[in-house]
Structures are given as C-alpha cells and as structure tokens.
Image (cartoon, rainbow over all chains, first blue to last red; front, side):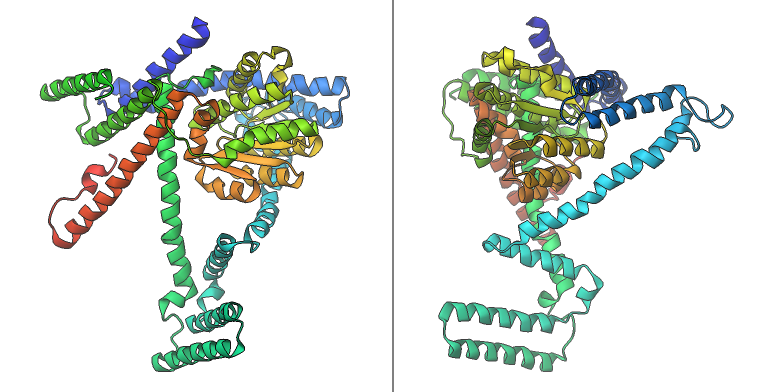
Length: 274
Length: 287
C-alpha cells in the first residue's frame, strides 16, 4: 500500500509544487528543471512505456488470429503491418550506407521505411482526415435543422458567417438584406395576426421605408453597415463568439487549476485507483 | 472564523512571506508577484471550502444531465447486452484532461462492475493504458468483482491520431457498443468518432476541455460535459465531500474573477477616458 499510495502521492506533491512555484524562482537549476528537465523526464518515461503498448497490441492481435475470433483477418493485417514496420525500421534499409545511415534511414528518400511512410501510412492517414469533410456535412445538417429558437439562431448565424466570408457576400447590397428582413418580418406578422390586411400594410410600409431610404442615400452597397453581410459576420465572429469562447475558457482554466491543486495537495487520489 | 486552523496557517504563510520580502526576497521574480498572490489566494479559497465540506457543511451541486446519463447509459448497455466503449482522449498523462478522463473511467468501471456489463477502453498512449488499467482494476475490486476484471479491457492501439480514430471506428462498427463515452483531450478526430458512434445508434456522452472540439461533440453526442463540468465530474460521481467542496471553491473563485473583470473594465474605461487612476492591465498581465 505504501508503495502504491503514499509514494506516488508524495512524488506528485513534490514535483507538482516545484513545477508550480518554480515559475516564480529566479534560479538557473530550478528554471531548467521547470522549463526543460521535467518535460524531458516525461518523454523518456513515455518512450520506455511504448514497449508495453506495443506488446499489448501484438498480444491481442495474435490472440485474435490464433483463436480465429470475429474479424481476425483484420488482425492478420495488423500483425503484418507491425512486423513489416519493425523489419523496415531495424533490419532492412533498402539502400546502401552511402545513401542513408541507420537512424537517418527513417527520413531518407528511397529507404523501405520512408516508402512505407509515404505510400502506405500517409495516404491512409489522409483518407481518415478527409472523412472529416463528410462528417462535418452530416453534423451540420443535424445542427442546422430548425427545431427551436436556438437552432434557428444557429442556422441564421451560420448562413451569415458562411456567406459573409466569401467574395459573393461582399457584393450583396445591404438594401437587399433590408428587403429580405422586411419580408421575413411580414411572414412573422402574418403568422401572428393571421390578417392579410395587416400583413399587407406592414410589408408595404416596410418596403416603402427601405426604398425611400435607398433613394435618399444613393443605394450605397455597404451602408447601413449593420445590414451589410461582411460587417455582420465580422461582428458575430469578434463579439458574441469571442465573448462565449472566453467564458468557456475561463471556466476551463479554473477547472484545470482546481484539479491541479487537488492533485498536488493529494485531495484527489482517483488517478491512482483510490 | 469557523476554521481557526485554516486562518492560523494563512497568517503564518503571510508572515513568512512578509519576512522573506523584507529580507530583499532573493531569487524571487518580482514581476510575477501578482500571479503568485493570485495562485495562493485561489488555492486558499479552494482549501477553505474543501475543509468546510470535510467538517460536514453541505453544498448544493446542480444536477448535470450528462453525468446523470452515465448510469443510464450503463443500464442501457446492460439491457441490450452490448459493451460500453470508453475513449480517454488521444493525449498522454501530462494533460490534465487525460487525468480527468481516467478518473471518470474509474467511476464508469465501478458501474460496469455493478451491472456486469463489459467495458472496452482503447487507448492511444502506453502510460494512459497503465493508469486506466489501475483505475479499472481498483474499481472492480471495490465493487467486489475482481473476477470480472480483465487486463485487456484496457488495450493499447496506436499513438497516431488518425490510425487511432480508424481503430476505434472499427471497434464501433464491428462490436456496436450500446454506449460510447469520450472523456479527455481531443483534436480533429472528435467528430470522426462521434459521428460514427451516432451512426451505430449508441448513446453518446462526451466530456472535454478542448474548446475547438466542444461544438462537434455538442452536435453529434447526446450529452456533453463542457469545460469545467468535465473537471467537476469526479466530484459529482463520487459525491465525496472534499471534492464537492472543491467545486464550491471553484464557483467562489469564478465569482471573484467576474468581479475582477468588471472592476478592471471600469478602471480601464476611467483611465483611458479621463487619465484618472492607473493602468490595471500592467498588474494583471502575465509576465
């Protein structure tokens, strides 16, 4: 218990405190530890730990193949890839020492390892990444479906941001948007009052006001700015969006701080299984 | 003055620091004094509420739907006889979000042990694999079901981001888990995972502090723990007084931060428009 409980907590407390308070100490050794050594220690530990991961991976895949569990053919591919990468990394360079030395062969052109990386690994990674485009489309479709007020607001903001950020957004006159708003408000008034006369008067007055305003000002494309799409998208992007994002950031920052303090002081011990 | 010991320690720390300051504060980076003061004050606030909770003071913890849904999801998986997939992010244990993800995994593992549901935890880092195994092992022991624990329920896949996403997607499509939980640090793979989970009809619960991924999870998952809620999950699930006290302390700090923001805004407005007062940003900026 002592080795599995007290020692880890002690290490976390000491290293955590040094790292936290080392930020305020002007002493080269402490500075070096906080800025460099501590993270390097972690990297060294993580590098050794990769062996554990690799062993676990190969063990599970081999078990699947040996016992012919469902989907065992995929495991054959995984085991083959694993063995191939080890051979290409440690045993077969594919080129002479004059072209690439051991170690440098992982990044040198013409080697077996580089071939594997360029023609097998990279295309497959790119394939997974490119799937994101389709997933974004399906997720956007669900998010933008008009179900309630928030979803409608999201849809409207999304359209404004998308159109306002492309060149065509800049040539849509603010007067056109104003006409569009009058017509949308007309639909709203009609659904509210259910009276054609009121709707007609509302739309007629709205259209007249916009038209008169246009004639007086000379129909400038970007005036009034609050109806010009690039200006609206900029406002949405830099004000409501940033305000919301910062609120979340402050919450996250405090959460991280509180969690770290709980770990350093040994109050939260769940990470060692307690 | 309910907590006399707490105030005595605070007084002692203050006196020691004052003496150190008066002695010329060797090795101390003076420009960072405000930051040190903030850290000590915030830590003290947290400690005060943690101690208050330990003394028996009760604090209200607002219900978080996503955390209530965790038990629901485990129950659903049990009824359907399908496993639960738990993804603790793609980063290592040096990220506090991964640590928080492993902590929540411990609570989920207790539930799966109780309900006798199978749990599948693919990880992308070896150290996370070891930590997650320990958390699961302990959870099954605590629930009195060490026989149900199998080391391979937590298994390593790969360190590479998209290879990991492909592997987890493969598990989802082949095993069709009834519930998928994503708790940790995520990047672009978040939507790939969540959309695949959505396509197999799994109940999905996500928790992350990765700001850019929150919208994706909100869109594709049934429940999402946003930012600080994720860090409060451990307190909520364990109902331990000291952890709940920490959440209360965090809320009080938030109140102070809001007050400082409003005060600074007023001070800056007065300073910039009239020249009266001082530039508060000089003191609040991190150096």
